[in-house]
Image (cartoon, rainbow, N blue to C red; front, side, top):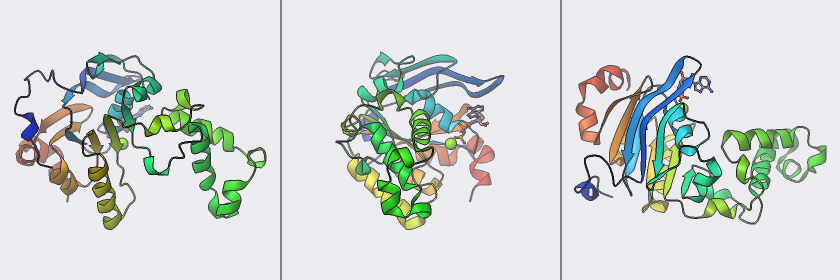
Length: 252
Ligand code: ADP
Ligand code: MG
């Protein structure tokens, strides 16, 4: 995949964007976790969002996916203002967060899938077989755990639908640190898989490994204290002094 070729006819105002945010603001109390963020992502683009811990990357994803409501500003997806749509409506329009799509049982509901995953977390305690097949009425807290997870990942609204709804080909996929906790080899495999499976889709990736980001991205958005510090191609970002000072300088 070569970076940049498809963007030569890009409008300066980003009007061809599949996703755009305009003047996004998200306040938690008096604190602006996202402050006047405007980005435009083109169809087919591989965009990475980087920045130090606490920069607002996950919050930005939550605003795009609808898991959090915005304080001010708009989110536009495929030309439609989706700022106030619930997460499930965004999923239906072709937006997906990084579920482990390969591990979904299409015939079960979304809730059942999430509950299975929650049950599997108890495998140390009960053994995998018992963890998975134990009747849920004898499973302390498993339904509460399931509800909490559904809420957190923004899927409460589609909980009773079959999970096939998640398997529909998404146009835009958001990955928030998909390789967190993985070793180098597993990280590389995951990235290869993402590139292979999602070659036609638009991707937005949050990833700590700067080398991977430099290698994969068409464009990079650098967030710093809730604001866009810089945006550009990997080459431009690598040479950006403000980015180096604020961020890359402190990295490996
Ligand atoms: P990143 O993903 O870049 O590490 P986050 O988006 O998770 O950063 O967080 C950005 C800032 O917003 C942090 O200072 C964090 O403490 C704060 N924050 C995130 N979520 C909440 C919340 N629900 N309530 C209050 N503050 C929050
Ligand atoms: Mg985060």
